[in-house]
Length: 106
Image 1 (cartoon, rainbow, N blue to C red):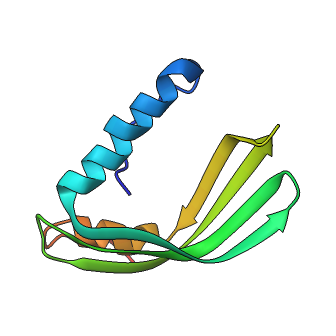
Image 2: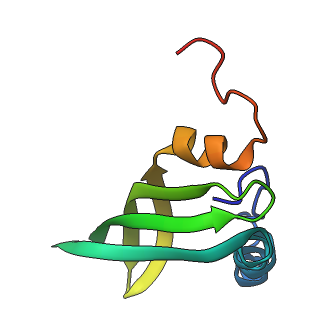
Image 3: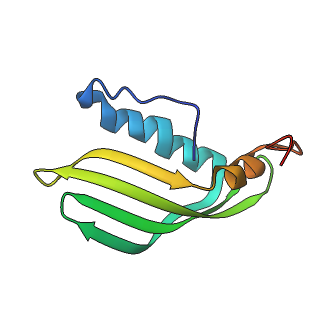
């Protein structure tokens, strides 16, 4: 949801702080009541899939989101080694952009 930043994934020792600063702190500062609520978990061995919703109101525009998400976690030796998310990025972009069309020609 924060978007725009890259995490230093080539240096694993810096990833936890990069996630904290680059995602969680930023989301907390920019969104009111932001939540990622899992509604269903699917166990596929070394892969776990979470289906859920992102909700919250973007402070700068006052616009709310209620977007579905899918999180795909890859595990090795019980530890998360990869994460991929899918969500309604248009809905998020429309909440973030002030009076601007997120997409010119729909």
